[in-house]
Length: 292
Image (cartoon, rainbow, N blue to C red; front, top):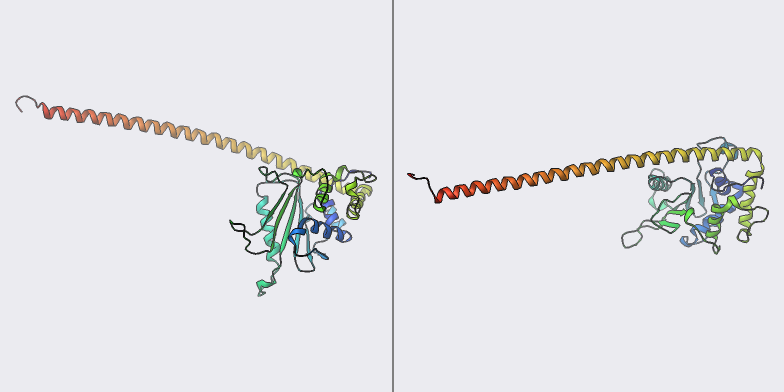
């Protein structure tokens, strides 16, 4: 390829899985990620918000996720998120609920609802305390019993994915998204020697070799870099504010501790004075003044 292309950049990602010409890739990807969760493999999908190169590459506010419906009526959302933030889990749940909720029109029966699956590929770690790269969330109680088997939210943290040997289709896709920018299209590794991966590389080549597409790709990268810088600065400010709040809280606690110590000392002093007065009174009772 003339230029290295990162499949995680949103315009490339949507072209890979959201273009009508790549519908087979979307079906393969969904089966690879969700296969164990589905009663049967996905055979057909309708892309609900298909990728339009002209519209997408000229609009920084383009919708970057892929939404689809299969021939059983099940709904799917696939999204790439390079930058994480503390409100991202709330956004994930909100968008999942929005897709699930929009299935019914006024007066329609709840029995028409179909499972909804949201898949998020993350470029940064969202769960730093968990070493696993794959996380699946559904409606379960504290014993793990399901309330309703209607899909869920699937997080895939690419930074944590480190399989050297590809043994499953899920691993193939994750390695492609993680390492795709560094692959040699003319001499792809053995794990890329499948029809789906060759088709995926064809999409990357299109961004690499068409100057207008590459220019737009660069523009998207610049936009994402700016967002990364802004978010990084925001994190620094938030951390500084948290440190300041922590220092103020430590100072408040120190003052409170000092106040409590003074109160305790005052109580001891008052108790000692009261005891002195009690003893004086007792002495006076036992040794009344002469002539009394």
